[in-house]
Image (cartoon, rainbow, N blue to C red; front, side, top):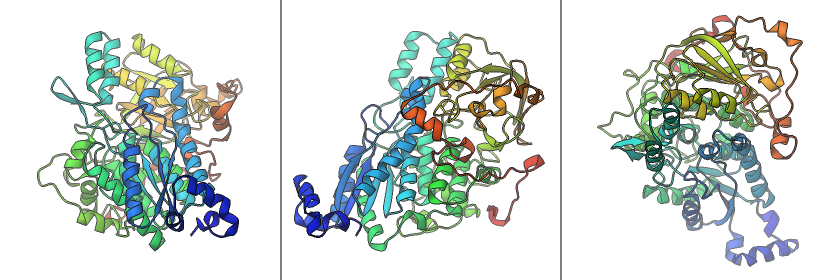
Length: 571
């Protein structure tokens, strides 16, 4: 066992003495030492139940013959930080969480681990740490929050952000805004739509790093505690069988995950996070690999932000397994091993099927003919960007640039009534290095929806979108403005063309004539974690990690067509 390095032999008497001080006995020390790592915090509902789940996971480890060793790491809550300088810390926290799990587990030579995660960045960080350490490991998502109820209608945090825009437009008064605020979030759990947390929770099951169905159980459901206990038992089985993450993660696993994201019109942040997980796993995977998954996978789940239901209703309809079952029936997922020891097909075949539900549709009766995002290129995004297709509009938008150097400037313009139909809001210097931290723009996009401009205004940025965003939005533009990307050269009044069919983001402005006059912006932060991240971070097109891949992602040719193969699986 790895832990023998810290507990076996005469030389390790000091280490054993310290372990005894924590209450461990000889019998405990002799067993495998298994990390129970969680991101508990009481600052928000997203991670609020993880300490309790950790107790159940620890009990499962003990029951299966191991000794649990508990660690806590950080979490940054997007819903609280959104629209503030604090949001710069969110994506950076993904790297910090990954690093801290590595350091705590490797620093104590632990044999295996259960990772309990609860929100947008903690989930991909769990997968990144699992791939990096490559020891027997199981991940469990703390679960979705229940939706709130306002005026007898279900609501989520998405409606609170949109109410801010409606309030700014004079459509609702202070009392109504306060009522929406108080009704939206009833207790523990992460944001309820197919936003980033629930998208990534589904991704973890599709990759095979979490048991199928476990992540779907809502945070406050009685079955969640038993799921945590089973994860504790399961990690001991993984240890005995030496079942490790890198034996599960390959290109096929990532293709499956990308298709599940597309089929549920999930968060575009999944692109960023899957790239980062692939880097940790050493799997060749590029931003362009997401396009075939989206093109050839219809949207079959009727989930917020573009649909009607939350993760709670999806759980009642059969959860991620129901989505996977529909895709498997049409040859759109390939079989792969999972953390349980059973294959993906076996896990899905064993899952129950709700007979009466309208959350998940058959592939032949889709809600939309293609997935919820598209990868664009062009003279404004040579390395690529992401068009979100969660709205109900067309795939084309043409308009006049309204350029802003920060999210705050753009939000003030929206709330001040200065944005008109036909405008294309340009928010730059919010990329991984320029932000730093690549803030999400939910405040701006929700304000546009709240003011009734969601389908009449475009928005492009080198920052990100929340999974709750819908409308005609393009994010992750690379190269970013702070590193001389073409978006840095745009002026007010330039015409911008967003073409989802041709997969282009371009302008007819003469950008090169402006290149000589461009100067890199002054760094917004010069010390601390944010400054260090800005120096180290790579392109969004490569996952915005702090140890970026130096290989250049392949860029498709004109028309950017993709190749379809039989059984719906791309080569």
